[in-house]
Length: 181
Image (cartoon, rainbow, N blue to C red; front, side):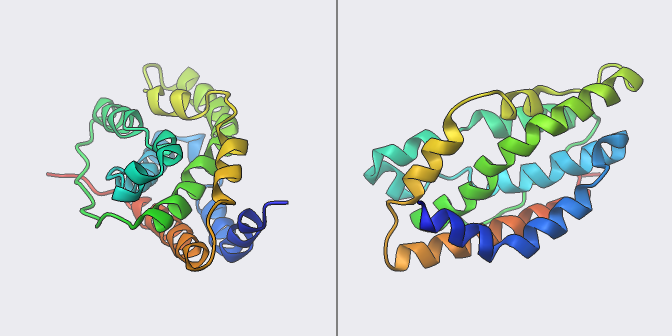
């Protein structure tokens, strides 16, 4: 049993519930979908700078996916937005992995969200779905990520919890539309 996975889930349960509530019905309209993309952009930007530990632990490099940011920015541009950069400081490696827990875990819900976005696109032809299609693609990333989390020990586990809590907060803050004039 992966105890860090359970620890992260327990430590962030309230934030996860709050975020789910904030996103309930988000893909019912264009504004909600845009908010979702902005929240995910904030999280992806938090994770955009791979920490030095990623170089030291080759297994972690797999979780660094620069395409996510490019796809999010393109979808937002296609929606007519030019989002501002969040300017978040890079995370230490173990906190980065904790924050990745939020992003990698969101792929499970992304499959449901993709179906909702596809229904929205029937009403809003041309709605850009590149990020969500990429994010929701079937893979074995999640179980492998959970296994990798278990390699964190001692104080690194507390760092991972801090990173996961920070990540949920960043997504919640990112749901607020922020764009340049």
